[in-house]
Amino acid sequence: MSGPLILAVESSCDETGIAVVEGGRRIHSNVVASQTALHAATGGIVPEVAARAHIRWIVPALDEALADAGATVADVDAVAVTYGPGLAGSLLVGINFAKTLAWVHDRPLVGVNHLEGHLYAAWLVDPGESERDEPPLPLVALIVSGGHTFLVEMTDHLTYRLLGETVDDAAGEAFDKVGRLLGLSYPGGPAIQRAAEGATRHDAAFPRAWLGDSYDFSFSGLKTAARRTVEAARAAEGLAPDDPDARLSDAATAELAWGFQDSVVDVLATKTIRAARELGARSIVLGGGVAANAALRARLAGEADALGVPLVVPRPALCTDNGAMIGAAGARRFAAGDLATLALDARPSLPLARRAAEVSAARSGG
Ligand code: KG4
Ligand code: ZN
Image (cartoon, rainbow, N blue to C red; front, top):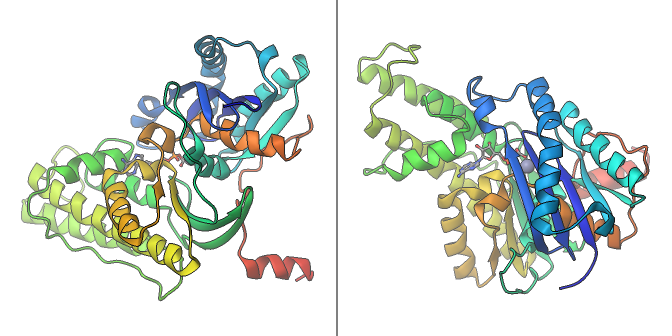
């Protein structure tokens, strides 16, 4: 594999990621300093705490990534950095760091959309892994993270059409909130998955918001239903409503975690498969932190197989935030000549794609 060697920086949320990636695919190194333990005490991310942790870890992460890759900054063809969407303070740390590296070492700077990074994680190949085909285009991608949930059609490289998105909470946010309701550890997604694996009855029924035949998603009604169901289960076990020390039994927790997860997985998988079928996609890509979920991966794998369309889903550590995915997308932007200047600024609400109707309204000045 050949192509540009990219040094990639990711700091949009609560993981400090630095990676060296070749040709948009081959990982030479991928260091992630996770702040999960730091945020567990507050049960969620405090933006200033996250930004300060990036400042603390970004230089050691760079040193380790370069050492792992056996490279220096002078060896790389460009420095790529996430400039949005994400937490402003967190993004600014990575952006300023990448700008400084690019300026001092006289390397081109590439700004990368974090969501495009999650999508291009499907192209990554691990060190030592044999080469494999790229996901064939056009494809349908489901990106599900703590802050975003959307379906896009990708007709060509760097070209997307938004099919649908969440109208309220992101899927990962729903996992995190329901995890908290169940008294599970932070973040809620992996904890709910683990709890659900212990369920034996599989009869807890939670609502599904289908929103007609649109490709949009909604998880706020499910969250409300989960709150009511958890309250009822606590009352049935004689537990006080708000006593965090009095935990629901493991058996009830497992059933509720399973029921909630089954509802999220059902809606995500059904809409993704329908989009792939209706649009004649040649592959399906799954990305973002929630794509690490084993139940979602298994369900989509089975249905994509039945449809005869390959499912490409990165290994779990490449689904959650990391620098390698920014290196994968950054290489494509670099090859397309899409370079940033040293005026690059954080874009906390940067979208990946807009709906066709919004694009034509903007063109006609509407
Ligand atoms: O992509 P990501 O690392 O950060 C954002 O860009 O948001 O996604 C983090 C989200 C969290 O909400 C976390 O609970 C969820 O991904 N997550 C999972 C799993 N692992 C991480 N959700 C369900 N099942 C998992 N195994
Ligand atoms: Zn992410």
